[in-house]
Amino acid sequence: MKTVHRIAAFAMVGTLAFAAQTSTAKASETPIAGIDVLLSDFYINPVNADLGLKSLEVFQKEDKKFDLAFAKVDNYVNIRDKASESGKIIGKLYKDNAATILSEENGWIKIKSGKVTGYIKADFLLTGDKAEEFAKTAGTLTATVTTTTLKVREKAAADATVLTLIPLGNTYTVTKEQEEWVKIKIDNSTSGYVSKGYVELKRVYDEAVSMEEERAREEQQTISSLSTSSSGSSKKSTSTSSSYTKKSATKASNLSTSSSSQKSSSSSESGSSLRNSIVSYALQFEGNPYRWGGTSLTNGADCSGFTQSVFAHFGISIPRTSRSQAASGTKVSIDEVRPGDLIFYRKNGTINHVALYIGNGKVISAKSKSEGIRITNMNYRTPYKAVRYTS
Image 1 (cartoon, rainbow, N blue to C red):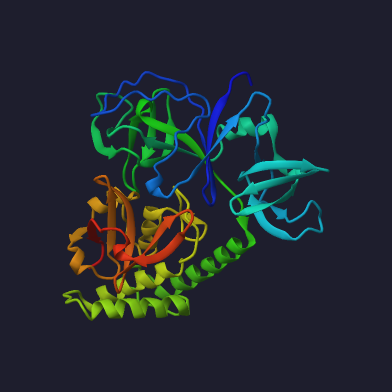
Image 2: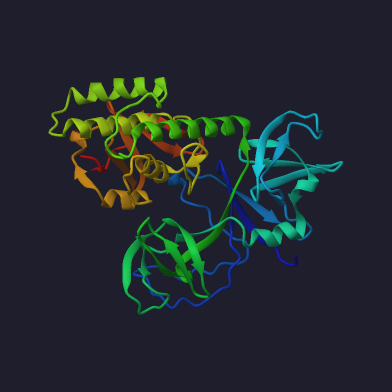
């Protein structure tokens, strides 16, 4: 390595993010506002702190080895608390998941990945030049908009039909990469092409899970299975069932009952039941981790990924980002919100956070990396907008 490359590794639970290696291309797309962004190898700008992200900048010096490793296994490899087979298992690194190498000793590698710091036998890890090459194509390639407003086109051409406009700062999954264009997924029903000149590309890699997170995931899979079997063929007409934890159900009942007694409602009984079920379901995940770009209710989600996944459990499809979620559904007055409605917040005139209203003046949301999924007062920031996706 002859040059000094700048790397920013995002401190996110469940993921590692590094810049994708891209070739510089003259953009043929002209956005409404903005400038050309030229990406050098392995370079990421710090991401908007309002989204709850914290970044750690690392400078890759000429004599420093590539310090990322990947699990070279069919399923997973155990992470132990000491460099020995007798060490306690404290986590798992699944196939192709990433970890940062801290040190090496006697055939063992000390790694840090997600919430886990421990040891893995070197034989089970891809390291060095092979890992560096693997990193270029592994994980998920994402694109973050770097201009005020960017056109998403039906085809990879400047004169192609414009499908929609996307705002500065939004991040999307890349499904196809071409020389000057990338195809991105906007939501479950919309995909299109954007010019590389106006997005920042980076790869996101899954990280290790601790044994506590693994147990929580297994419990949630059991809960989801019970919930699915008890609900029968109906996805939307759902009531609070025994598949929800007692703690969550009690909390949902206390919060929503207090709120409902203060508000007049024209909703049907089934609509009220659905809203309470949504709240009860969401409360199960209180305390789980925040993960930028994530949609997993157990292993990590960001604010809009959390709300999207909660609603998806009930067969309700909503857009992926907070701004898109705010632009859809039915707008309601902040003073008339009901449990199950979404509350949106903004900074400098731009929506940057969404939370689920759970009653009694409180919301639950994937708040930040340091706080995870938690309950707060609805007015911890000034609410900007409320949207309803239920009856």
